[in-house]
Image (tube, rainbow, N blue to C red; front, side, top):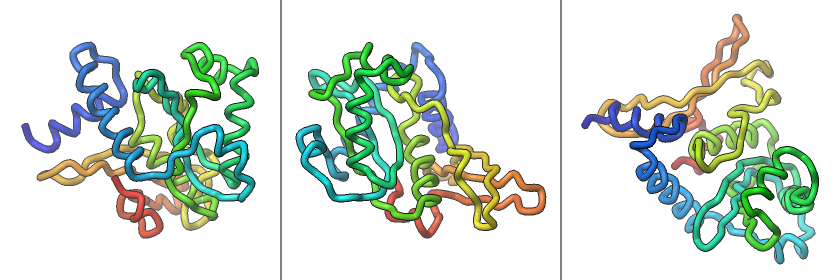
Length: 203
């Protein structure tokens, strides 16, 4: 099996619910989550309640029950701990996203957060958010409904962007997330894997 064929399987795992790929899907997803848990800063609710320092960045919110991942959600915020507290508080609201989380068993006891990266620049945060959404994309586990924020902009400050996951290496798998400006006079393409501002976040 060549690199492109392997990439096609990974893409199917992320975007389709094929019965024959369920076990592979679970193994692949747990490998990514465990990798991030071992590398990034993990925050539980007890720390969230106490921490008052303002940090900006991108985060992963996930629910884990009996060592099983129930769902994940990627987000970004100018104030991470404030956002974490909002997520936990909203579990008791009737908002659609949180009703679903609650129906899956989410509570303040089993919700955890990983700080994926610290970043003060909003546009870089939005691009980083897109990168991690693609990395963690899953029809089974991930609750993100949008791949790229409408607020994300190219270097020319155009806000009409689109995104895509590709493998550009014929010899090995390298998950490249491309963001493209839709402005007809610009059409800038940013490869988030190689983008200088994001190099320290590659997976």
